Image (cartoon, rainbow, N blue to C red; front, top):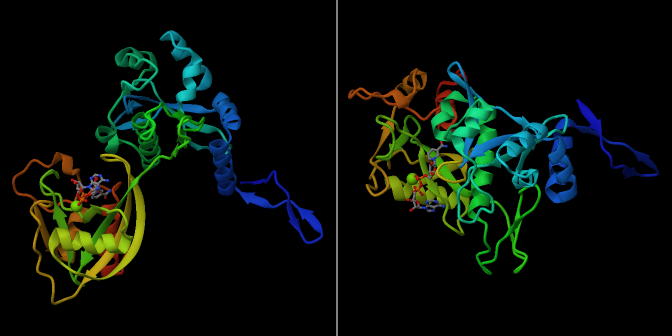
Length: 352
Ligand SMILES: NC(=O)c1ccc[n+]([C@@H]2O[C@H](COP(=O)([O-])OP(=O)(O)OC[C@H]3O[C@@H](n4cnc5c(N)ncnc54)[C@H](O)[C@@H]3O)[C@@H](O)[C@H]2O)c1
Ligand SMILES: [Mg+2]
């Protein structure tokens, strides 16, 4: 589907309407809502709302899965009315996306209990009873959500958390004010504009040609190994961060590296995971684990990793003491990097 753009492009001596793709139309619409408070206020009238309570999204159990209910404006006003709240509270919502038909999607947290919040936290269990669902922590619900829902909820939670933690200007100490979409906060006193932030993290799958290097922290579930990850230091490029993290964590020098892909990761806060594949020199592969950062690190053969990728069942269910190698779940970028490495080695595509 495509729509005609409202703007006219001037081209030589005639005017023409340029046909815009659905994707471009959506991107331009969201841009407009972020920049124009009045346009966003209008979108709040016709949009749909994802509800949170203290950063836990409203979910509905359906067999072994969770569905993510959305409320219309009228339903949300009805709910707020039942809890003695003014519909003005809807303006606390943050914009998280829109449909192909330009129905704006918002997230609203009715349970945040910070000292900074100007609104009361609504009672969780009464709201759950009213809504026929439960507010469930995202970490707990992760494996029962489809990938589109989890990605949208990750974004919503990250944005809601950021607003909750940036209610005051760090220079003037005065309250900051959210724009209608929630894409920024402004301090009326110092005029400083605050934008939501993510911390850049490099995640690197190191190989010596035949094997790949995986590591674990003591906080990981038993048997789980992942690629090396680390926060970028201020002033570093991605390449510098990869080289430093590999040196710091396992005592190896990177020979070459290649960017692969990226992912927004909400735990524990908002990170931008930047995935790279790296090689080390064949003769320089002796690992020296930094025990302050990692519990263990080791080289794994193609066979071991390919077998672990095929292993069914979640690592959360891991109970036995005989620990097979377990890899990160499919929604983590580490899983995709490891899968890509196996595919490259075997020149074959694995099932998603
Ligand atoms: N999605 C995935 O596949 C995947 C896989 C592995 C790790 N991760 C994520 O990567 C992140 C970083 O990995 P790590 O823990 O090994 O990092 P790391 O090796 O940099 O070690 C963490 C330490 O770095 C310091 N640090 C520096 N800047 C920080 C910041 N902005 N926020 C928090 N701590 C900071 C802290 O002292 C912290 O204890 C983790 O949050 C983890 O959730 C995601
Ligand atoms: Mg690390």
